Image 1 (cartoon, one colour):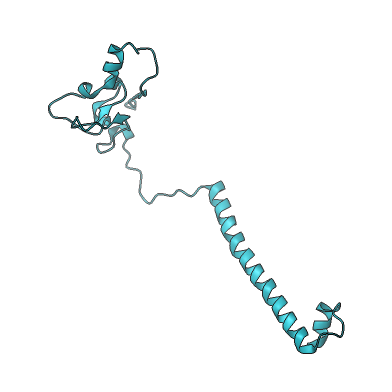
Image 2: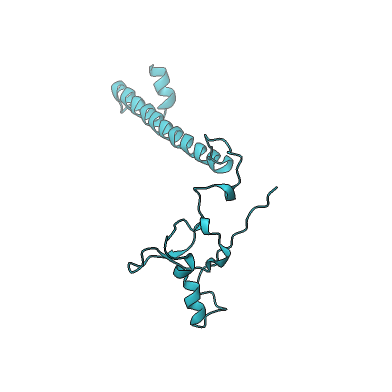
Length: 144
């Protein structure tokens, strides 16, 4: 063992005893091992993140239903709205004339969606051509 220690600690003169050389060697090897282990653990996580970033990490356990998105009963589109406590339902911050009723996501049994449509108020105030409200378009799928 002393030959191995002198190979690694050849620059150390006779001022260090054999026990000190052994302890220094053990500490040095331990630190190199711990730092190497930490590097490998971090490198493994970084490699996994890089692979996931490049390859993508999305997978689904469900099968395709074979139905178009437009034909789904329980799926609605996001229609921008403003919640106001004075109204039972949210005010719609878009012109709903081009949006199918089923895509709004809620139903008022007494009033149509146009009652909650803020674009009517915007038109009455003279902001017809400006981009005050959001634009929502609905393009129904073809029956192919």
